[in-house]
Image (cartoon, rainbow, N blue to C red; front, side, top):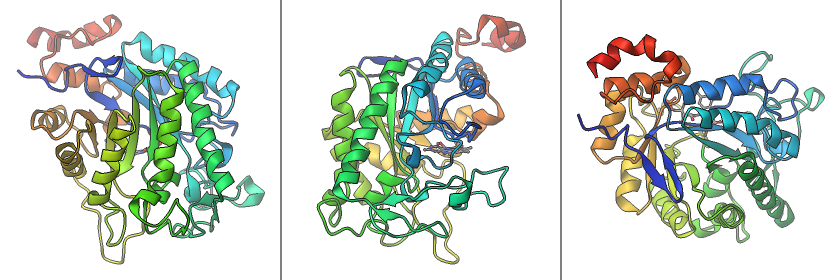
Length: 369
Ligand SMILES: Cc1cc2nc3c(=O)[nH]c(=O)nc-3n(C[C@H](O)[C@H](O)[C@H](O)COP(=O)(O)O)c2cc1C
């Protein structure tokens, strides 16, 4: 059987063992609020590598404290955070997977209460509870969240510097790839979108202005990490609303990202606009895959597809039909951390991916293979 999902892929100097990648998923599990990873993160991320993922990309990690979605997010603005990530990288490597990290600034969607254990999950965190002032391209609030302050030029420079400093720490911690978060309504996406970016300076206006900060971050990070290290960007290829950032604009931005040394774009959607009454995002199996396929077809950029690609055959189909180069599997991996092993065996891989300690549990499947 042809096995696109199990085929290795090479980006720059990195060869990843297969095309089953785990996307970043916030865990809101830094109870101390200091951005430092804990045993929880070691266990959580290690399990996906043991479970057959090709690459495991750590959750949105704040490049500055005020860039966290919630105080319980990981951070990478200091060296203690870097040291706590090292064992996670080593554990992922020990199972043969590549380790990635998503560097993020949450912009106007920062400083919120985490999804559980608080009175108002997702709402702006009050100052008295440790909340902080948020920043954005323009002073326009997202939905019910607190109104942000528009970044000035010096603030923009600081954002670029913070991404670079975190990227350097990520390299020092041993990560194989870095992903810049420019999706889901967080800071870099807010700059891209005409709905959230109403600046009149060189960071706003036409698409080239709105994309300027993202390209600055890309250039600065690209220049600071080893030439052989892949740099990825995650985008929301559409906001699903009239007048928002859409697939045509995304196609142009992805072309620019390629010219600026980005090696792969992950194609997600939404997160920056509240849909009008009655409108709905067409959520369903593979609902974002056509966006990835469009970008793959109309640019030179390798892409990963994500979003309800929950079964091995569905994921294999996406690759076999040329719609993407990699498939990311998120919630299905949370449900079943051995998703990659099951996929490898379902697609009749050779079973090598099953760690020796687990082979007795997979014996029947291995014989069938
Ligand atoms: C618990 C959870 C946390 C998430 N956190 C992030 C994140 O940190 N960064 C990000 O870009 N996307 C995040 N996402 C989105 C996922 O990366 C992924 O795109 C989404 O879950 C769709 O893929 P799936 O259907 O395979 O789960 C999160 C999703 C979930 C379920």
